[in-house]
Image (cartoon, rainbow over all chains, first blue to last red; front, side, top):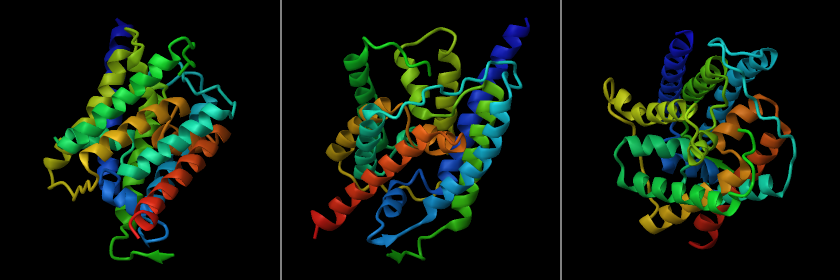
Length: 150
Length: 144
């Protein structure tokens, strides 16, 4: 019974967290690809707004993760799973560099892609389908690897 | 460097960032998980019956955000200038790159930096650098 209650609570908090995250993205301007590209365009007319999005998010995040690191279990009793991998390798650097190229081409990263999909945008849908195919290609190429535990 | 003061929106940017931070805080402190969209979506490729639910719930929340917003106010401008072909190419590269990197702007950029993870700091510097470079080439080299 307690398990079922916690399971329902987990779903509720996941939904709530995703919803607040998405509203934050819209308010911040990150759901507008033109604004994201204006932030990345440092040599043109630069719009530094998204630097403040990072500052606001990390400001709260620093507090939350300081608390999380000191706990074994979440307030709902789940084991707190923080990434244990500390290796800086080619996969991390090359993968991130590739991601940045794709981000710079369209001004869309994964979270805002879901918000755009939620607006019913056809262009958002095309990006999402391509992104999921890209992730599928990774699975096909890397399926022999063990899941990295996250 | 020329700052575009007309489009600079410091207060909504900061407030939106705080909401993103609050969402990440709720997710780690209640669900015990990192609010990284790459990881949340990527995990659905190898589904396990214990985690399909919360993954889909988070994604559903993200997609419901514009609808929830519309209950109170019209959505702010959303301009996507890229052609469909370019969007498809960009999506493909983002999908492959984020999975190899094990994270994107949310998992590395927000949660990872908040954890002071060296991996995430390197990842964020790397994708910011190539993002800036890509926009530079697209806007100032190819279209001179």
